[in-house]
Amino acid sequence: MAGSLDFFFSLGSTYTYLTAMRIEAVAEAADVTVRWRPFSVRTIMREQNNIPFTHKPIKTRYMWRDIERRAARHGIAFAGPPHYPNDGDPIANQLGIIAADEGWCPAYTKAVYRNWFLDDKDPGDRETLRSILLSLGKDPVALLERAGSPDLQERYAAQTDVARQAGIFGSPTFMVGEEMFWGDDRLEEALDWCLRHATAAAPGA
Amino acid sequence: MAGSLDFFFSLGSTYTYLTAMRIEAVAEAADVTVRWRPFSVRTIMREQNNIPFTHKPIKTRYMWRDIERRAARHGIAFAGPPHYPNDGDPIANQLGIIAADEGWCPAYTKAVYRNWFLDDKDPGDRETLRSILLSLGKDPVALLERAGSPDLQERYAAQTDVARQAGIFGSPTFMVGEEMFWGDDRLEEALDWCLRHATAAAPGA
Image 1 (cartoon, rainbow over the protein chains, first blue to last red):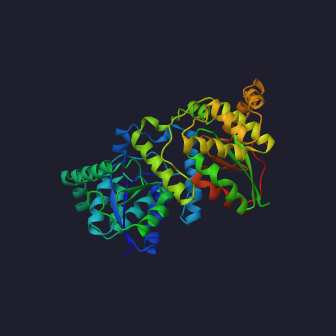
Image 2: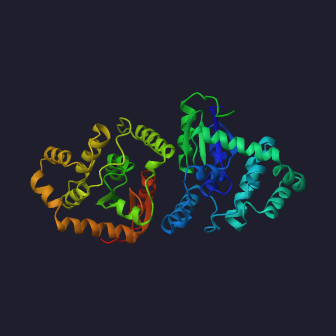
């Protein structure tokens, strides 16, 4: 392995769709291991008074066009802008932490994003999550209960704090040791960095 | 020629440094003509309540690190963050409009950016502009007077209005017909777009 990279993300972030759909292939081609680390970008954005620009129609229109073009560039499906902003329920991300522990976070995250971007089903919607879990051969009842438990709330807050301490302010963010790369459009640069530098310890790992 | 691209920019924008230093070479390699079009990004950002994040220290720190890394990637000099934000005097951009009319805008813009990024001299400072004009073999007295005239103020406002009507909200922005690409990191995509599409009329051209 050429190194490893920490992929900090929030389900509910728009540009993270592109990363979720392509990071496995490009990281594998670069021989880089990816750690999937859901955190609450909303919490950090609120703290930094860094508000998503949904009330800025011109920037929002550009964002969707940019995502559409970049999806086409990477051969990723795009069916027009889904509803946004979405439900702020942290349950999808807390499920993501369990999924990362157990090794099915990539499949889970892609399923959540496909449901949102291609079928306009909200990442925070429990019925959607239930059917995603079923499709992955998981037990929705047990997992949704565990994902909502105080233990997972704490794990989610702790991972968010790791992100905060690392200086992360957006999703997706790639950490290579202490070097931070923000945005799907910096994924290749982050992988290059992995290849050129010995892998330092991951933040909070 | 494979087509042409309109490079809308404001002297005073940070990421535009990277574009100013490299657009001639990459556009020439792609056989694309570039029209240099200074406009007032400040005016549009104010109108859209889109405020530069200088009061957001974490994002600002990341921006400079990102610029530093991308400068290294492109072989562009970087001497650490210069002072920012800078003087809002529109004179540098109004001079840029004259320079574009007369064909010396690339040399002028690069000189302004080198002075700012490498010597920490403000783009709005008239003494700096005077010495830049001298170094380009121009008449500083006549040009500074013309650049500050009502005629140039109007030209600058008109070019800003073209940008506004095109949906531009940041600098640098590349327009290929009506297709908009925002950010130095979209320059290659904009050039690809030129190559793949017949060139439509430029906005306001």
